[in-house]
Image (cartoon, rainbow, N blue to C red; front, side):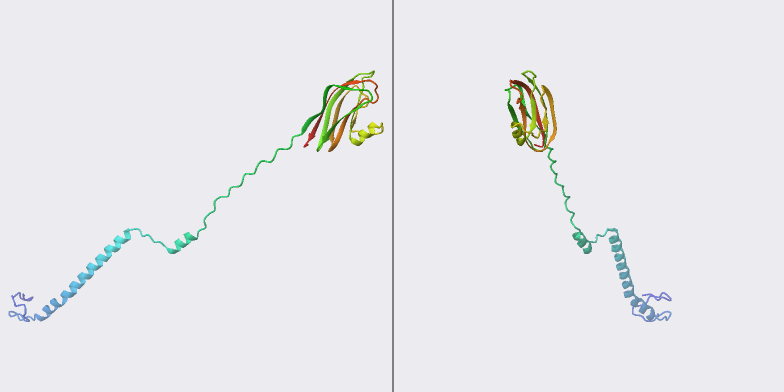
Length: 212
């Protein structure tokens, strides 16, 4: 070793300088005692540097944190029900069509004198009877046409007063138009009771029944 004061070459175990007499024990003690401290400080600095490096590297990566509360919240979410499809309702049934039928349709109906010719028909709800007749024969070419019921026909047969929804009287030709007959059974009667000779009748009478 060298003396820190004069620079003389000295043995390593020297406590004093042989040239200048300087005390070497304090310098030596300081030198040897500080080596471990220096090494420790260096190690601490290295450790701090490594720690800082890993902290910076870790901070650059995005952290993914899964919270148990979030999972429970997602699990607790109600499952939306499928939209209910309203059943298609069938269309309402069409209104019943009126029934139209001929009560009588004859272009050459021959009736003897003093005779009653009935044609029965039924009205289901509300009936309209329409048509036309014409008669030939005898002196006046006349005939009587009546719409009545069974009781009226009985009274008519006995030359009594009877109820009629239509009574033409003695006519050669006429149009029949009876509206809104109530439900029931009826008779369309051609009468030659006041005649002694035959009558030839051309007629067509139709029943239009609403909701038969």
